[in-house]
Image (cartoon, rainbow, N blue to C red; front, side, top):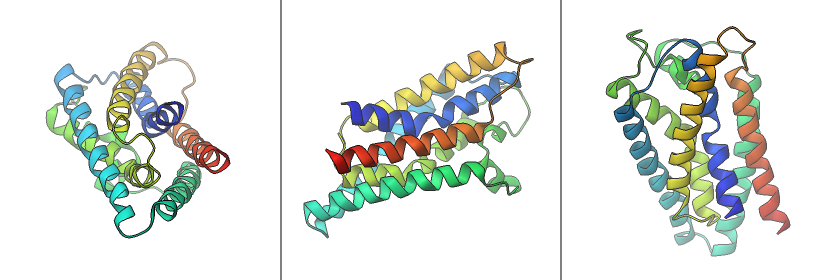
Amino acid sequence: MLLVTLLAISLSIDALGIGLSYGIRNISIPFFTKLILLLENIFFMAIFILLGNHIKLFFNVEIANTLGIILLFFMGIWFCYQSVQKKQCQNSIEMLRNPSHCDKDNSSHIDAKEGLCLGFILSIDSMGAGIAAGAAEICIVLLPFFTAIFQIVFLSTGIYCGKHLKNCYTIKETLWTAFSGCILIIIALIRILF
């Protein structure tokens, strides 16, 4: 249960940074859009985990578990690397790198269409780790639900805090990506040691 909670936090922590960014810019996410995000995240995470779980059809269980652990470790390193990368991209690519730009119409709220875009970006961001978790058999039934719930909680908390911290120093979104990467590395090391 500890591993699934840590993994869900790792896959969802970016939502806190995005929420802070939205809150500081007075962007809100209505309940219906949050529901879309929740369902979309459960759907995609379940697919990624099933893909990872089916790796065992091609490899024996021990090799699949080892591949999953190795993939988690390298996903953690990749997330840490992404957090220090400084390239700037445009349009859709910029939204993939910086999901806080999903409010395309500058309406100060994320509507259902923008919510689908944000949900897709947040889900794709966790694809590799979801596949790795499925291959490593890390509580594959609960993980999609835990990840989706943590994502909504972190997003809502970030928006709330961002609205109250507008005039204070803000934490960059890249810090949450680095933190997420560190958690993935810790999970991989725990799986190796125990």
